[in-house]
Image (cartoon, rainbow, N blue to C red):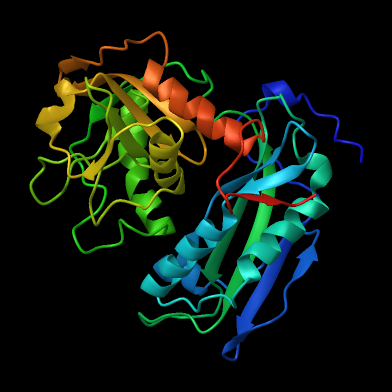
Length: 341
């Protein structure tokens, strides 16, 4: 199979339409069988539920070319499970069992020429989503939906790669207790856009959000979970009912325990503890791990001991082990890697 003629090593994290995408329609109480299509544009009624009441949930995962030349996906069953939970929370009909992974596999196979080659640093980003497509004017769930999956080749999420970033403590709240912070709903990300862009205008890469009830506990950023390393080498991850259950974070916990022999604490983390950690990172599908070098709390700079030049040693081991598993260089735990081609 001949790859597309792209400058794989210089791709940004931007959308580029590929040849095929998948679509399945929900109507009259059931999902149809779904199919691959070539048209990337969607025609919807102006009164569609996705437009009127933001009834949409999504996922993000990647396809990789491994060292031995296979195309694989990383833990798509976890994305399938999370999408179902998100859908239930927004009164969206869940997909038939196995449909998510079937659709992802079809899209990756059909776009195999767009999967970046091994060693390029790029991947094929896959975006599954469900949206309310039926007309609705009263505040109620839509009666029709579309489940779609598209893919696009991408480079690193942060253009400087593993270079440590600077984040600020946000005055705004990302999610309310007992709200939708623990699901991957489009509305959550819309709420973070102003705060994110304001941070960029002020010279910061991201925001650190605190819990909205007491503003004493660290939650997450607009699109990633936090990880912390203690002076004695423990991995600490914040625990909260309003944090998205990151697949990358859960994978890193297992990597830390089973591959690196680290002690892991998944617990509530007070903001006052921040100065006690020796390494700080953000983790998620897009970037895997992005090291944090500095946190600014309303003008007060909190410098992370690992500095602004490179990723800390424990964080680097976590990053290299997880990406090694994803790329086929390190043997993966059972069920983590789904071979597509």
